[in-house]
Length: 342
Image 1 (cartoon, rainbow, N blue to C red):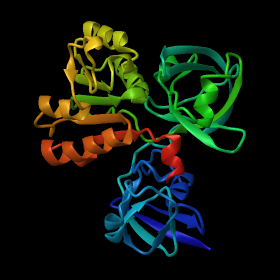
Image 2: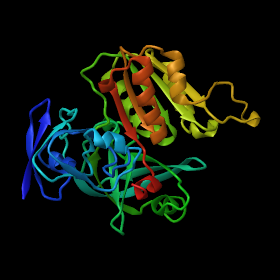
Image 3: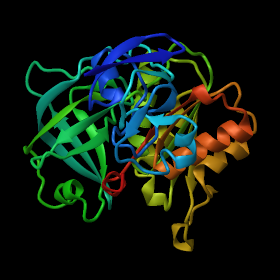
Image 4: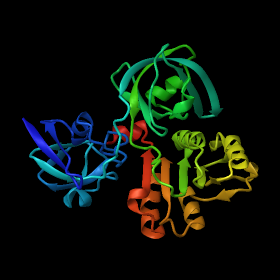
């Protein structure tokens, strides 16, 4: 049995097989619904069911509270139709521009950027190229059938190698391996590109880039892409960490600020200690943005990092700083623990 899905306000239609999620069917049909983790944890794919009925698979309550679901809210990555449905969703134009591929890669380089962040550079097979947008991610396909997602930390024009920033999560199946037994020349298989977090190049609005922890990886790719475009849009990067060492490419950001005329860098540390001798901004990174920008109505915001940072920024920027909701673009970095509780 198949069901018809109608997307409003565009009017686009596609069929969805019984047991298939709305997002999977949309991607198969080339309809660009927004998404992030695809596991019911980040909320990027959230929309509304206007007509018909869906049943949700496992998901986190914080991504879709029961109160929202009762009003028709839906996570399309885990919502399966039981009837023909009409949904409301913000579509992403040209989201299927580059084909999703399954590819082998060889680890060309491993470099510790901090005590708990590893840079991994992947060499693709000869004459193979991964086309993607700055900000998108790949999924490693592990031997047990599980997958782990990491954003590409380099812009597409710098794709001689694909670089990733991997944070060690003690007890994590993949990251424990990265920080113990994994070595250069090992082979890893991945699928990509995925995600709808990328620069909206048609806009001339000034940009706020908001990163926490390794959420800096796709933000770095966005900055490199803006440099390649020779963009004159004003850009302010706010990067937050608990301690100064969490800002593991602080020197690169200072270099950008010194050399790029329209670029400003604001590092923020939340749990600084006296021995850090930190003289910069302190507190929560999204609140630092709000302290500097009471009115975000003329801006675009690109936020990436821990779900609590992304969710707080989305809520407060829209409610308190007049940011248009459709000008907030985000990639919420869900951990293995997040996915297991979804």
